[in-house]
Image (tube, rainbow, N blue to C red):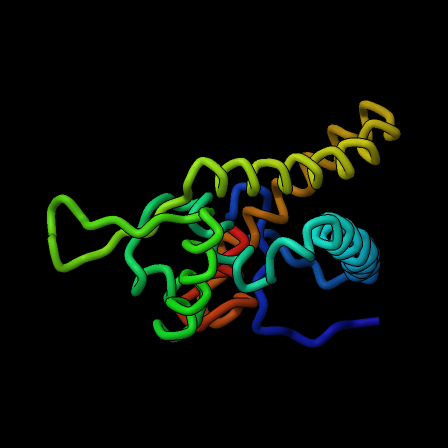
Length: 187
Protein backbone atom coordinates (compact mmCIF):
# COMPACT_ATOMS: atom_id res chain seq x y z
CA UNK A 1 0.00 0.00 0.00
CA UNK A 2 1.57 3.31 -1.02
CA UNK A 3 1.44 6.27 1.24
CA UNK A 4 0.96 9.89 0.26
CA UNK A 5 3.68 12.39 0.96
CA UNK A 6 3.48 14.35 4.17
CA UNK A 7 4.95 17.62 5.30
CA UNK A 8 6.60 15.85 8.25
CA UNK A 9 10.25 14.97 7.86
CA UNK A 10 11.74 11.93 9.51
CA UNK A 11 15.06 12.34 11.26
CA UNK A 12 17.62 9.81 12.43
CA UNK A 13 18.96 9.72 15.99
CA UNK A 14 21.45 12.48 15.16
CA UNK A 15 18.63 14.75 13.99
CA UNK A 16 19.60 14.39 10.31
CA UNK A 17 16.92 13.70 7.69
CA UNK A 18 16.25 9.97 7.49
CA UNK A 19 15.65 8.01 4.33
CA UNK A 20 11.94 7.63 3.65
CA UNK A 21 11.15 4.50 1.68
CA UNK A 22 7.38 4.86 2.13
CA UNK A 23 7.09 1.07 2.43
CA UNK A 24 4.47 -0.76 4.46
CA UNK A 25 7.22 -2.05 6.75
CA UNK A 26 8.33 1.48 7.59
CA UNK A 27 4.73 2.56 8.17
CA UNK A 28 4.11 -0.47 10.40
CA UNK A 29 7.19 0.28 12.49
CA UNK A 30 6.14 3.92 12.79
CA UNK A 31 2.62 2.85 13.83
CA UNK A 32 3.99 0.42 16.44
CA UNK A 33 6.31 3.10 17.83
CA UNK A 34 3.48 5.63 17.94
CA UNK A 35 1.18 3.20 19.75
CA UNK A 36 3.94 2.23 22.20
CA UNK A 37 4.65 5.89 23.00
CA UNK A 38 0.94 6.55 23.41
CA UNK A 39 0.71 3.71 25.94
CA UNK A 40 3.80 5.00 27.74
CA UNK A 41 2.34 8.51 27.83
CA UNK A 42 -0.69 7.16 29.70
CA UNK A 43 1.63 5.52 32.21
CA UNK A 44 3.70 8.68 32.60
CA UNK A 45 0.53 10.68 33.14
CA UNK A 46 -0.48 8.23 35.87
CA UNK A 47 2.94 8.57 37.51
CA UNK A 48 2.69 12.36 37.44
CA UNK A 49 -0.86 12.21 38.81
CA UNK A 50 0.21 9.84 41.58
CA UNK A 51 3.10 12.02 42.70
CA UNK A 52 0.93 15.13 42.48
CA UNK A 53 -1.84 13.52 44.52
CA UNK A 54 0.66 12.97 47.33
CA UNK A 55 1.24 16.74 47.58
CA UNK A 56 -2.11 18.04 46.30
CA UNK A 57 -3.05 19.51 49.66
CA UNK A 58 0.22 21.45 49.73
CA UNK A 59 0.35 23.01 46.28
CA UNK A 60 -1.69 23.80 43.17
CA UNK A 61 -0.68 22.82 39.64
CA UNK A 62 0.06 26.46 38.67
CA UNK A 63 2.31 26.77 41.74
CA UNK A 64 4.06 23.54 40.82
CA UNK A 65 4.68 24.88 37.32
CA UNK A 66 6.42 27.94 38.82
CA UNK A 67 8.59 25.75 41.04
CA UNK A 68 9.54 23.44 38.17
CA UNK A 69 10.53 26.34 35.90
CA UNK A 70 12.61 28.01 38.61
CA UNK A 71 14.17 24.67 39.49
CA UNK A 72 15.06 23.92 35.88
CA UNK A 73 16.11 27.40 34.72
CA UNK A 74 17.21 29.14 37.90
CA UNK A 75 16.35 32.62 39.16
CA UNK A 76 14.49 34.93 36.78
CA UNK A 77 12.28 37.98 36.75
CA UNK A 78 8.49 37.79 36.65
CA UNK A 79 8.22 38.67 32.97
CA UNK A 80 10.57 35.85 31.97
CA UNK A 81 8.76 33.42 34.25
CA UNK A 82 5.41 34.39 32.73
CA UNK A 83 6.83 33.74 29.24
CA UNK A 84 8.04 30.28 30.28
CA UNK A 85 4.60 29.49 31.67
CA UNK A 86 2.72 31.02 28.72
CA UNK A 87 0.80 33.22 31.19
CA UNK A 88 0.26 36.91 31.56
CA UNK A 89 2.37 38.61 34.22
CA UNK A 90 -0.55 39.29 36.58
CA UNK A 91 -1.53 35.59 36.75
CA UNK A 92 2.09 34.59 37.27
CA UNK A 93 2.42 37.24 39.98
CA UNK A 94 -0.63 35.98 41.90
CA UNK A 95 0.71 32.44 41.76
CA UNK A 96 4.09 33.64 43.04
CA UNK A 97 2.47 35.61 45.87
CA UNK A 98 1.23 32.38 47.47
CA UNK A 99 4.58 30.64 46.96
CA UNK A 100 6.35 33.56 48.65
CA UNK A 101 3.85 33.40 51.54
CA UNK A 102 4.48 29.64 51.83
CA UNK A 103 8.25 30.15 51.82
CA UNK A 104 8.89 28.18 48.63
CA UNK A 105 10.20 31.08 46.53
CA UNK A 106 11.72 34.44 47.36
CA UNK A 107 11.59 37.83 45.68
CA UNK A 108 14.85 39.74 45.78
CA UNK A 109 16.16 42.84 44.08
CA UNK A 110 18.53 42.31 41.19
CA UNK A 111 22.08 43.40 41.99
CA UNK A 112 22.60 44.69 38.44
CA UNK A 113 19.22 46.39 37.91
CA UNK A 114 17.40 47.82 40.93
CA UNK A 115 14.14 48.03 38.95
CA UNK A 116 14.04 44.27 38.55
CA UNK A 117 12.87 41.73 41.12
CA UNK A 118 14.31 38.24 40.82
CA UNK A 119 12.34 35.13 41.78
CA UNK A 120 14.25 32.12 43.07
CA UNK A 121 13.55 28.90 44.89
CA UNK A 122 14.14 28.91 48.62
CA UNK A 123 15.73 25.90 50.28
CA UNK A 124 12.20 24.66 51.08
CA UNK A 125 11.15 25.10 47.44
CA UNK A 126 14.26 23.29 46.23
CA UNK A 127 13.59 20.38 48.63
CA UNK A 128 9.96 20.23 47.51
CA UNK A 129 10.79 20.00 43.80
CA UNK A 130 13.66 17.56 44.43
CA UNK A 131 11.39 15.31 46.51
CA UNK A 132 8.64 15.31 43.90
CA UNK A 133 11.07 14.53 41.07
CA UNK A 134 12.78 11.82 43.16
CA UNK A 135 9.39 10.16 43.71
CA UNK A 136 8.78 10.19 39.95
CA UNK A 137 12.24 8.79 39.24
CA UNK A 138 11.65 5.99 41.78
CA UNK A 139 8.36 4.98 40.18
CA UNK A 140 9.85 5.03 36.69
CA UNK A 141 13.04 3.32 37.89
CA UNK A 142 11.02 0.48 39.42
CA UNK A 143 9.53 -0.25 35.99
CA UNK A 144 12.84 0.07 34.14
CA UNK A 145 14.52 -2.25 36.67
CA UNK A 146 12.09 -5.02 35.66
CA UNK A 147 13.38 -4.84 32.08
CA UNK A 148 16.29 -6.87 30.72
CA UNK A 149 19.53 -4.90 30.37
CA UNK A 150 19.42 -5.07 26.57
CA UNK A 151 15.85 -3.75 26.61
CA UNK A 152 16.91 -0.92 28.93
CA UNK A 153 19.68 -0.03 26.48
CA UNK A 154 17.28 -0.06 23.53
CA UNK A 155 14.78 2.02 25.50
CA UNK A 156 17.44 4.62 26.27
CA UNK A 157 18.54 4.75 22.62
CA UNK A 158 14.96 5.03 21.40
CA UNK A 159 14.05 7.79 23.82
CA UNK A 160 17.25 9.68 23.02
CA UNK A 161 16.35 9.47 19.32
CA UNK A 162 12.80 10.64 20.09
CA UNK A 163 14.18 13.61 22.05
CA UNK A 164 16.52 14.46 19.17
CA UNK A 165 13.63 14.37 16.71
CA UNK A 166 11.64 16.71 18.98
CA UNK A 167 14.56 19.09 19.18
CA UNK A 168 15.04 19.04 15.40
CA UNK A 169 11.40 19.86 14.63
CA UNK A 170 10.74 23.28 13.11
CA UNK A 171 8.71 25.57 15.42
CA UNK A 172 5.51 25.16 13.42
CA UNK A 173 5.60 21.39 14.04
CA UNK A 174 6.14 21.45 17.81
CA UNK A 175 3.48 20.74 20.41
CA UNK A 176 4.12 23.90 22.38
CA UNK A 177 3.88 27.62 21.76
CA UNK A 178 4.55 29.05 18.29
CA UNK A 179 8.09 30.08 19.26
CA UNK A 180 9.16 26.42 19.11
CA UNK A 181 9.37 25.63 22.81
CA UNK A 182 7.88 22.26 23.66
CA UNK A 183 5.84 22.53 26.85
CA UNK A 184 8.51 24.89 28.21
CA UNK A 185 7.53 24.64 31.86
CA UNK A 186 8.22 20.91 31.86
CA UNK A 187 11.75 21.21 30.56
